[in-house]
Image 1 (cartoon, rainbow, N blue to C red):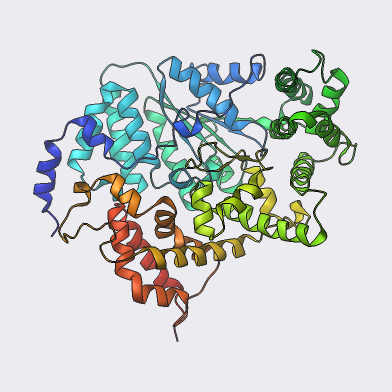
Image 2: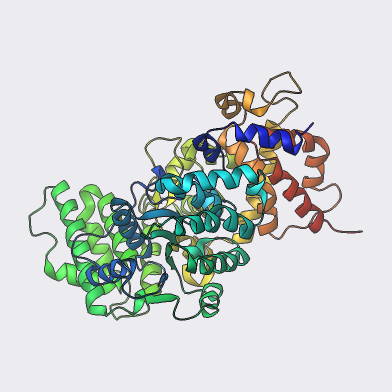
Length: 537
């Protein structure tokens, strides 16, 4: 039986602020300096000099706008600039909070924990705010389940308004990176509206995104006096080429020293050719360097492959990116394979990579193999030559991640990919994952799955390690996301289909598992959606 509201408030009142605020649901991977983001790059010295100066001048209040919107095409270096700026503001004790969106990144792929994550970070980085945010959570014990607008008003703007009246003259900066990676356009629009309401607070907002319609429209709704817009891909080509040249010289220099090559390798002419091929895309240069490094003793031949591939004339940057991704995928297929072996390899490659790019939260190679019901060795061998586009940790329990979201866009777009051996049908990939999730849950879930043998036991009374053991990551993933995969796959429900059969046997087992994961509310939303897509006979 749930506790009465007064009892809940009494329990909350006895918690210390740190303990209470840490219990607010928040995305652990959201901050720029989270463990998951620790290896992401920052700008090299003497690159992006003028742009960073403009950004830091803005933060110092020299242009009067409270939002700085850095927009640019995929691969132009927005997130690298965000991390560089966030790191500097963190050093200056001016960073209030940061949220780095990432499609397919679980809690950072949607807006569900956007405001609460910002509130938790603000409470940590601005000690004066801690008590007021704590008071707001005490007064509104259900705040995490309320609308984004209510959360924003109670957890962010309310406490900041008290900071304004406290004689504190300094402003704090909120960094929101890759807003276009938020998976719901309605939430994207809402977030922009909420950020606009911060105009009277002591919060400055640095935001990056691609120039997509919902975001452009959101800024058009604001007064031009409120936001400073900077179009990254409109920077002078000579400046961008200079910065990419520095990056290539630095990265290839490291590779050359690793392989004991001559100090001048690969030479100025080669650098100039690579800069021309990059066509203004830092992600092209970074991917090319990873491709070369992975060649180890064959780095010179890999460099030659890049220099000789594609057309020599300048074309749209996206075409150059498509070209290098195709080069990498084709290089993963051994020339020693027979035609039948090549066809089989491509089939497994499409299945594995297709799953990776449409996953709604990252999984390790081990968990992915169990979810897909593929031998772990087969998954590892398939991904072996794809370190160029995938971050594959040596620790097999750490999740796989894309180096850049542009690869997802490439693989799911038939026109961009061009090669049917690699192209992934997104809807079919989602349907396949939905099927695999249901099959995995059907063999993994049961009554009292954690073996507690006590119907009234609280989830907090059971060690998290026990829950992890009984509900490993791939099973938790299946429980959380199988319905969303059905939705994205365009599935409709029918009597006695796979979904119907699963629910008849395992509905309560599924809800119990969500209870151990403390995500029962997700199950309620999922059931509501299932009702909406069921065919009415």
